[in-house]
Amino acid sequence: MSKVFVNIALSLDGYMAPEGMTIENWADPGYKSWGAKWGALMTWLMSQQYFRENLKFGPGGETGPVNDMVCKTTERIGANIMGKRMFEQGEVSWPEDAPFHNSVYVLTREKRDPWVRPGGTTFYFINEGPERALELARESAGDRDIRIAGGANVIQQYLNMGVIDELEIALAPVLFCGGRRLFENLNEPGPQFRIDTVFDGKSATHLRYVRK
Image (tube, rainbow, N blue to C red):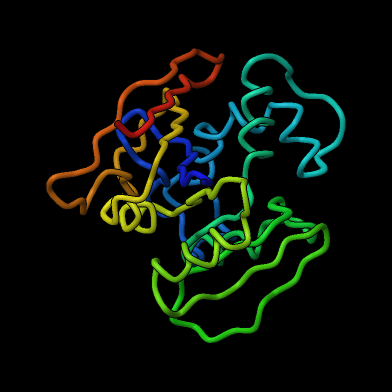
C-alpha cells in the first residue's frame, strides 16, 4: 500500500513559514523580511541539481547525497495534498509547468473546476474535507506515495487523523521568531515516530522519522 508522508523544511525554532509570508504581501518580500528568511530556509533545496532541473532553473547545482534524496523523494510521489493558502501562493509563483507532474488535491471551500497545467499536473479543488482528499489521492497515486505538502494547518489535520507514515524534515539553521509553526493544534495522544535516518548537508540537517 502507498505511504502518506510529509516532506518539508523547518526553521530551527520550529516554523514552516515566516511571519508576513502571505498572499497579501507576496509582491513585497521585504515585508518583515519574509523573503530573506524564506530564502535562508530553502537554500539547501534551491542549490540542488535535481531541483533546478525540475523547475527549469537552468544547468548546474550540487550533486551528492542531498541531491539524491531530493530525486528519490520527488519520484516516489504519486499525488499531493495541500491547503488553499499554499496553492494561492504557488499559483502566483510556480512556472506554467508546475513542479508536481501528478494530481494535486487542494483543500478549500471554493468551488472550482480542475486546473490542468502542462507537464502532467492537475489541481483538483476538494470541498468535502481531508478524508475525501486522501481517498482521491490514494486512488490516483496507485502504488506510489502521497505527499502532504502543506501548509502547517493541513499537515496538523493529517497528523490528528493518524494517517501520516513518515516525516521528512530539513532542519535549517535559521530563526524566524514568528510565523506558522508545524507542531501546533495536535490532539493527545499524538502519533508516535522513531528515528530512521539523520544526515548533514551544508545548509540543513535532514531528519527522517517513520511511524512506530
